[in-house]
Amino acid sequence: MSTQLPALVTGLVDDAAVFPPGSASLPDALAAHRQHRAAWYADLVGPLLLPASTVAAGELDGLVDPGLAIGLIGDTGLDRLPLALSCLPPLGVTARQIEAPVARRGEDPQPGLAELVTLTERLDGVPVYAEIPLTFGLMGALDALAEARAGGLPVAAKFRTGGLAAELFPTPAELAAVICACRDRRLPFKLTAGLHHAVRQVDPETGFTHHGFGNVLAATLAAADGATVETVADLLTVRDERPLVQGTEGRHDSARPLWVGFGSCSISEPLTDLIRLGLVNGGFEA
Image 1: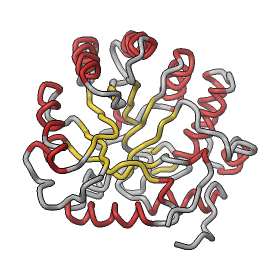
Image 2 (image 1 turned 120 degrees about the vertical axis):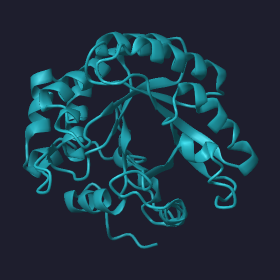
Image 3 (image 1 turned 90 degrees about the vertical axis):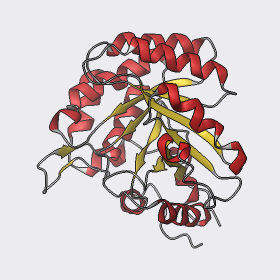
Image 4 (image 1 turned 180 degrees about the vertical axis):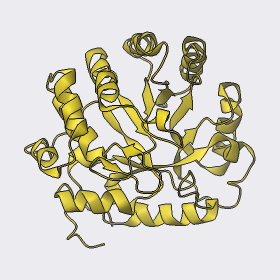
């Protein structure tokens, strides 16, 4: 049975169990997601994220319960997303959100973004997140998204905050700039990759410095309150959880501004950190 969690963290963590580094099998991921949906912390968990290629290949057949809501990740190209979407209704499955990259690093994001916006116009109000590289053409792409959103389309941004190469980890200054750019355009955003723990830390295996989702939460709250890029970057840099907890004081019952959430291949890791920070009461029972 779900116990109401603070509004500040509701839906913060999408279930990305099938994606690296967890890479769970589809049956295992579906079984674990059912457990998450029935647990006391269910309000923390967003939809199960599944690749469009998996859906289009018919791999869900015979495995899913009717009523399942997923997040569809466009890994097959924008032109094949409609095929994956058409496979869901016969299974009784719905897409709660769609996320798709619109360009590779260094490419102009505008053509892919225009194609994704056109697809969004044909959908029935399903939120769509355009993954935009934090490189060439970023601000123009955010302008285009903001214009489409102002016109009534449920589109927003998505950014990568980690991966298998150092260049996929934006610096605190870069991430702060894009958070504030979204703030200035009233544009919600999602994040993906690298947010394994609440506080900024170095991965001992790779040597990569990972952003903390607690840092991002505090930084986004500050940005929404009008903080400068420099102040937001400072919050992304700290490795002491105390200022991050202080940044959420008095905000637990308020909806999270701007930042829609992030995908994690583990639900238990962020849940454990949220309990440790006092943002979730771990004393509830199922």
